[in-house]
Image (cartoon, rainbow, N blue to C red; front, side):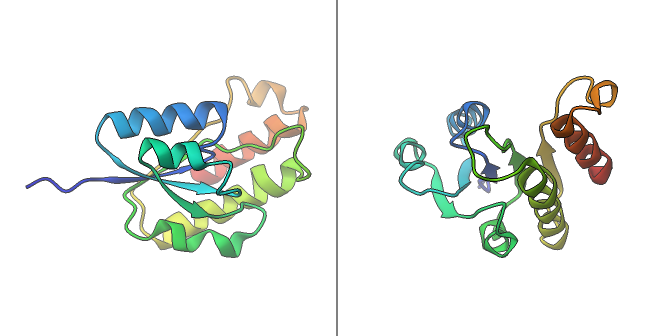
Length: 137
């Protein structure tokens, strides 16, 4: 029999994240979504994903979501309307994700950056994304 792989998606309520969740579910993966607001993520549950509370600004909320996970896909980023800073989410929160993934012995960690971040490192968010890629290497 086949073992169903479990994918943890961070940022599943966002524009990119919801597409990842839908595709993974359609391809037969078991999908768990780390969400800050369970009500806001209810559509993901309706699609068949499991919702777990977690907040990148609160690193202690992250580890429990990794139990039984095979693949982590990080599509989260700070939004202009968020009260959080890019430093807190796109740097400190992401480092907490990477550290948790290492401790959980996750073999595949997929993170999204942006094209030419190195050439645009004067832009603070792109500089953080570049540093994150370097931290993953």
